[in-house]
Image (cartoon, rainbow, N blue to C red; front, side, top):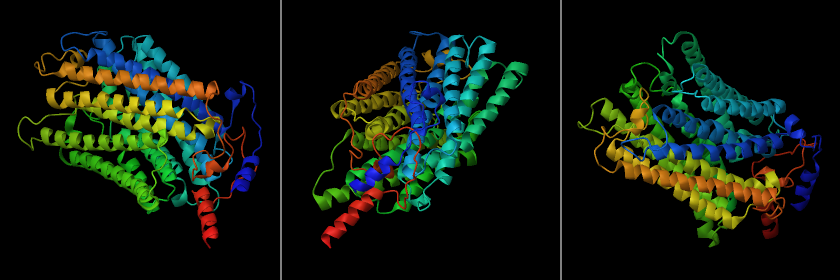
Length: 564
């Protein structure tokens, strides 16, 4: 096995400019992946900070604490855009750009320069997005030109991410090693393909809406009647079920790490791939826009409401099935080997991310069912309507701060040796897991209870002031205290993100982390055949793969030979 690794490690030629200028002109998928990963984590820090400011204002039912009505609406929108378009989608796109070629035996991405272009388009558009808000633009902004600029910036972000998704999908479909079939690729590569495919289907829907909104706002204002109609027509991108699509890579990460920790294969591979694919399918939320027409709630009434509830139910079953499959592998290890797998940060974060993802699907299923009953008067009078309350904020917190961020924590700790050549500090990592998990729980449970028990509004499109000043909607029923609980959780999440960045800076930038061997975790997938990290440039000789678990194949063959 050592010889195999060495041969693969030396089959690399360096054609990249090693100077800092090379990062601007790179066509190396490993460099582009690093750029996306680090930039997205920094954007996450900004997004959580903005969310903290928004939640501070929700702790008062009588007056604004920090903002006013218009700026509240603007920061509310910016926080969602930052957490989704600047963090959740690009972070997993970055991991995919780095890892997918290494996992499928490809020399580089299908369109390496397009991958680099996707990053720079995304980064420049992110700067324009923040600039539009600083100049009083964005939804509910007072500067008409900068409201238009905001829509152009969001369009640029979507185009950049869409280019990246096309690159990932094309690479996974066309550049696999000849003996590697789709149903034998590593779980993360399969999840990356599912995510990329569904992004290619759903993101153009947003682009089409932005074109209509831009034309209407700039030249006619017939359909919208001003800028207050912008957010309600694009906010589907930041809510479930669309959030499930962005979380598909979490299932791939969890599968890779749990199975490698258990040192086992999943007993039914096709069921694992099918479950990951189903979550992507049920995460297609472009059609579930409550404001496609002026009827508003019609999309969750009647037959459409049944479909929405069924989509949440399908996502719930897909997640539960995948977790059961990989969990069974852990149980087998415990029962047969009488040995507990090594408890690493990656394993803890993977299991935690899976539980948060399952919770998010369950809460979405409950919320969709309750709304369908309430709107159609199918239940008892007085049923709680959860669609426009902080129940939605709770679900976003579960999916982004819980499943998404813990999935990132697992991936960074697991693949840091392969990406940067250094292991992150495990003690800090386990503390990081506790901080993020605890913060995500509080950040979600406060809004969940507030939306369920007090009818606290999440966001009133026509009048953002009503979102914070809700004293005429609820009595003294504890809404402020529950909002404060959510604020405390978000502050804890913010400290968790800062701790992750600190760990990366000390371990990687300052080189205090343990220098990585080729395969420090006894991984199973093909990237662990290469040196850590692989040299710049593309492979001179492509790996000849017939399985997504070559290292496990070698270990099993050696064990069989020794026993025979």
